[in-house]
Image (cartoon, rainbow, N blue to C red; front, top):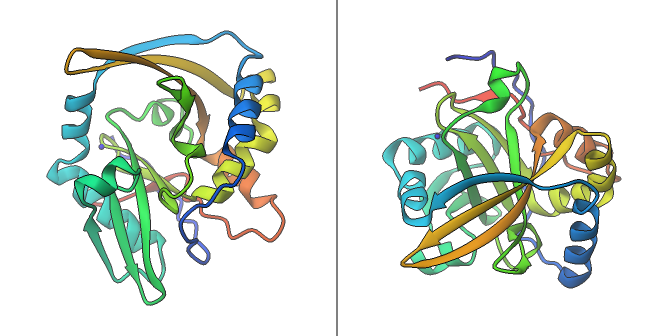
Length: 226
């Protein structure tokens, strides 16, 4: 996953696993919106090193603190299996209503803190030539963006996050509030390119808050105290 002021924002009822019936259309909409601006070339990533980084003891502790703080009825957090991980679920949150899948998006450095803003959320548009993680049905119900160096995090309902992005991405790219990046990853001799957008957690929280009948899962400037 420097000390920043925590802004505690309560969360509403926890959502269930995401189900999308229009992944291809959503992917097309996102791709067309993203093409409004040129792509910024990003860094290269070693998949195994990134995976190992996200499964450290410190990362695990950060996830557990975030879940117990932001999910009101959380009564336990467990690591998902390797098979479940490949489906986009890193953790399971236990609640009286049943368990909820969580997808962890962990970054080493909190660039938002350096600007005095909320954390940056990196949202994958496509990878390996297919739709990114946000558009894949049957994955996690909650998405946790976290930064290892500042221990800040932002938690969102996956369905609300997708809706907010689909409704606002074109405008955000046009006015500079979101930017597109391209990264190259490699594993076992294979290499692939991914495209993503970078948008602040505060902006996502505001957009979700404007959705009709919303339960806003945003803790944009939260910090998990060790």
